[in-house]
Length: 93
Image (cartoon, rainbow, N blue to C red; front, side):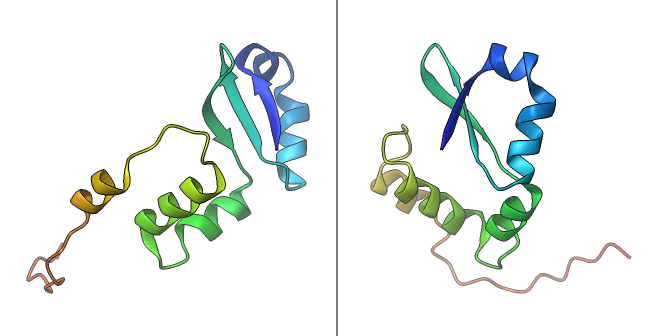
């Protein structure tokens, strides 16, 4: 994991993008606190196009980054749709 401040990112964006393309995740900090992460498009696609959905991607992120403030287990459980998915009659056409 590489950390970069916003000002460093602003002044070195091309180099940081090259690092990300090579597979390095960049954790952006503001006043020493993590605020965002830059990841490659390949890593982003694997995380959000795996068929597991954003919920599982978030749970995986929480496991990898326990130091980051996130939702409690109870908050996450309350967000989950507990009803079985029903097909919709909606159509764009």
